[in-house]
Length: 458
Ligand SMILES: [Zn+2]
Ligand SMILES: [Zn+2]
Image (cartoon, rainbow, N blue to C red; front, side, top):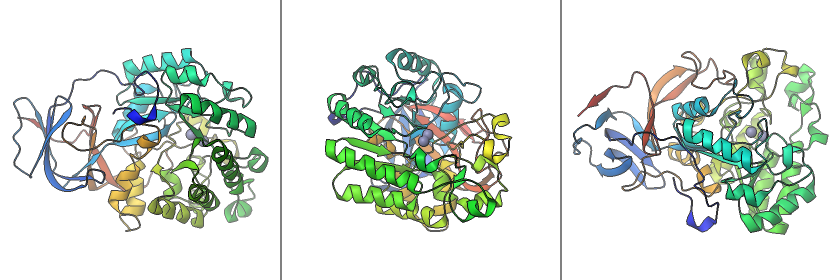
């Protein structure tokens, strides 16, 4: 994956991955679907030396000596997914996840690139911390990883980080994710620095004076259970404020994990005004609601921030994705240790893992019932790349192989075979999903291959 030329950007390559043997691979008779390349038909796809060497009519391409052959008959080949929002917990909490396990989880979900958040211990707020993370990724990462640095030192919300130096060290952009940028003047100053050094500001929108000690969506279910709620306006009011500031400074902002109907309206309104604003929605907010929290009897794996909201909110996210207000799907993969989650709902930390279930959850809940077209979902699962100045994967001759092979008909129970992630706090656990990733090729190398997948050498 290459950095877009038009975007300015850091002097270092923005994504880091360990060295792996480039793939020599023939995928036979797969249904190739690449909405950006305009391909939606059965093809043979030949990968040589990690690059897409040719596309041919089904059954026409010969495997060169030594190449692996994958049977694509009845399966789909997509451009690999790109997730602009993951938490890999390193440095500091490697018992939950690290670059090895996190990128293993990404590859198992069909992702060929991910962007990691800086709310680690220590926070990624200085060039030395970022530099050592990138070095670790060069040793451990199975798929390319990019890093965001924090907007404020220690995520404390007071002082800006050395944004220019962090960009020079390879930061793809900036975020205080986990927390909002509470003070408007700090966001304004960050946008002024952005003019000099580039780098999108990704924003976790939550007004703490409204969300308070809330533990779930403020609505019918919280009222019934007597639990403190997090109102939708804690998100939408801050989006409106930040869109106004971004518009005033002509800066670029990206709104993370949109959850509420009012938020979709706030982003649509800002876009209509010409504000440079983009946003993402997560598979869990697209698939689940507060009713699932109730039905789960307060299973803490369904506790996350922002919370699962009402049916009308979920519908607004789906409509926003279809109509283009929502630019991409991002998982907000947030691993937590089992003992942290095995406590009463009120005390449990917020977050769900999501890399391994992202495609299957959206496919099962929205594509299979005919709510969203498959091509749209495939496109939105890699559209996060563009928002951070990366070129999204494409199935075209001469491009690096960034692919995932998926069996759309295969059903599997989430968690039954364990997880590639080091953590098990997946909100879809126990559900039967349709759509299984069989193989992932990232940065030209095979990063994941399902155990049962038949392989034969030519
Ligand atoms: Zn967040
Ligand atoms: Zn997050």
